[in-house]
Image: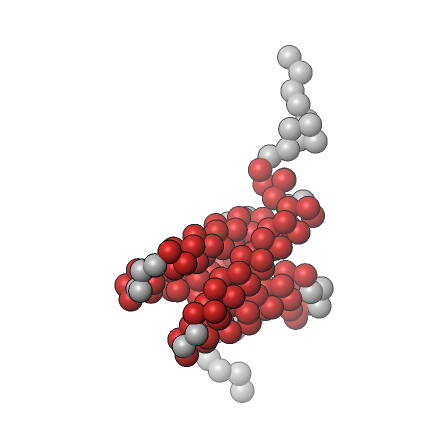
Length: 153
């Protein structure tokens, strides 16, 4: 019996690690992030305006972290992923705690759920999963990676 090679039948991980998948995932994350930023900006008020500014700032940071080739930026490319995921999750939960509940709010939450799913796929693509992301984060800070908890002299 003949077995298919990985080129004939690629795994999900191989597909996610391809350049087209990287472009689609990053582009989708940025597009959805800017879409929810625009919704929040249009609502007016200080809280929504600050939320929109946070989304735009994190979209820019995510894009830089995903595509920059400088070693320092590559070392901390996990940070915008974690920050955008946390910010989006917090905004998602806060809506259901605080409200107000209206149709556009539910549209924004659907977009934010999409952001969370795409970031999860991107973490699998780049780090192999959450554990790989934690390892990358720990390795990016030498004091933590070496186990030395004392400040540098």
